[in-house]
Length: 251
Ligand code: 3PY
Ligand code: MG
Image 1 (cartoon, protein in one colour):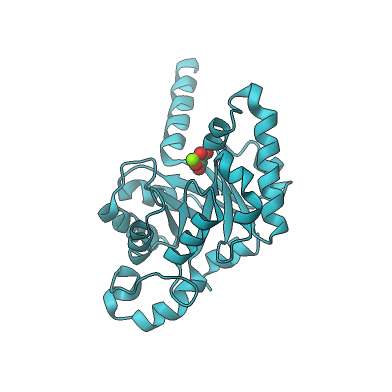
Image 2: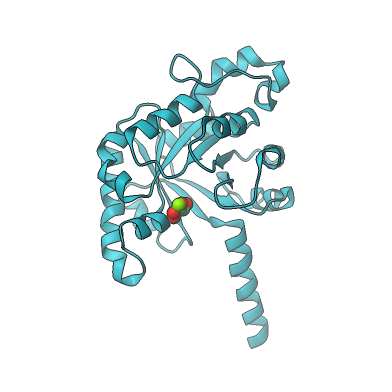
């Protein structure tokens, strides 16, 4: 089993960030920051299949596990990022147990799933197919996002799906979907997050969440969340640049 999956499923705290800048320079800078993992965001940034492989390659040089958030549920996307050598996938907008089962099927080789065998980068371009087949199912991390009202309603069935490693809460989409936006919606959103976290922990699954900053990581760790996606490279760039400019103006 990979060290990364071991940490995730044993609920050790792991801190990652979204890689949204479509250039390996940003991966190298982020990888030097002491992160436990990176998550290349192919859902909300302009990162396509070929670039995914080069970004994963850059993370590998620095020995930081790189997951990929795929744009949707298509098994073709899940397969291609895993063939590129991603350490796992984050599948957005999973709202039913059937969608969760489909994500498992796309991520795992038989007999657990239906992933196809190919001579991609992950298997040494074909030179290490038997070794890769023997280790991939237990080394790759599958995280699915619950971030819709439908997903919240179906949470107990979703978290029970075998083969899913981390239940990841997307507070942005969830807040829009359940009409709990901004400060007036905070109580409702927090209650929904706790419902999902409790259900996942009861089912023996690790729980993850996106946080725009580290300010409330301790609070969410208190409800059993251990997999934290801390902002993104673009957000860190913007926040520290803005702070630096403000400080220079005021110096
Ligand atoms: C959300 O907040 O909707 C997310 O997907 C964050 O990862
Ligand atoms: Mg989302």
